View: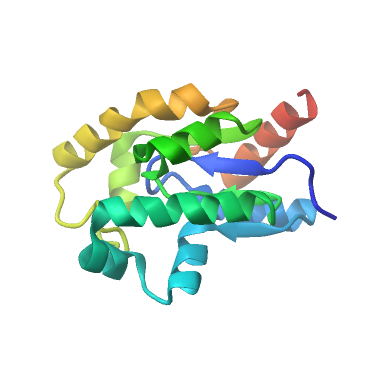
Length: 169
């Protein structure tokens, strides 16, 4: 059964949006999509290839297009960390009720993503460069978040916190 209000995970890359989205989906028996995977499936290209071939600006337009689609189809959506870079996506997310910001310490994030070749905005970045990108995005995440959850906790602790907040809404 389609949930009337989609649950949308936002946050910097490596904060656990896919992991938590899948976990919540399984335990609540709700439909789930990872927006980046959805884009890759529909475009028949990897995110790094889209970045290389079309640039970040064109990727952000595709991201907005597919976000609009997914809002009508899925109960739970995990977005990419840079979705807030596009003003259309940001405006659309502002209108959503259950936007959950997953956040944790930048050192934890760095350890999780430093060797991941699938993250074009993290490729060859130092901790300091990644932290600068992280800091440039915080205010936009905060602006659209219904709640902020520390994703440095265990998956079950994060799940419990999210369920508690959603049930009290």
